Length: 251
Ligand code: 8X3
Image 1 (cartoon, protein in one colour):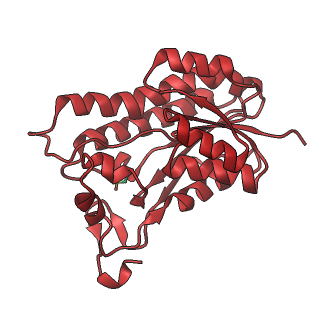
Image 2 (spheres, rainbow, N blue to C red):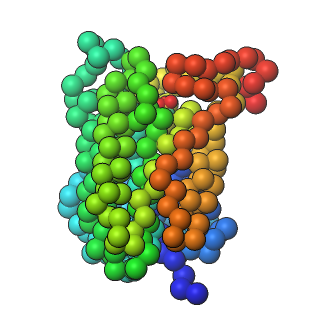
């Protein structure tokens, strides 16, 4: 059987990093890891044997180079790069943060998808995975810039599925709730590690590995099966504004 080739963005840490590990180690896929940080990519390459391309998905020049440098065919694209910036009300939020979050979570995802679609279509069995968020389904206070960007990413994903049906390309949305990674909350709170830690107090959050397993499961279903959308939350998080916190839940 042909070895499948996957491209994973945001691969230098968290969900992306774990997804590269899972697709290579557990499923023997050939993976190209994409991220901005070269040292992290090199470490991942040493661990997993993946190929690496250093690129920033907010740069058209970088993404054009990525498309040129990629070994074809490409069977799986995991659009994982994204993130939250800031924790403010709509009234007080930074307009720059709104633009940056839209650029990263929405335009960047579209940019990479556009660039790789020809290779995905040519493979005869392409998968476009978009890692959105439960923030794309439900708003919460102080997160509007991220919530709005993720709602847009969900809308883009659903539209893309409508447009690609019949081409042999599957479009899969993975929507995680609270996932503790080394960087997500730290970035959101501008490096304030106390604020970042408080997000996970009293609950056992998901891990990057939990989400990587879900991505891997979705793309390894028989190809006539399209997992449209997987919503994955910690057991104690029933909704964006409904989290039950107890000291005994902290691992
Ligand atoms: C991250 C999940 O709950 O912080 O995408 O919005 S949440």
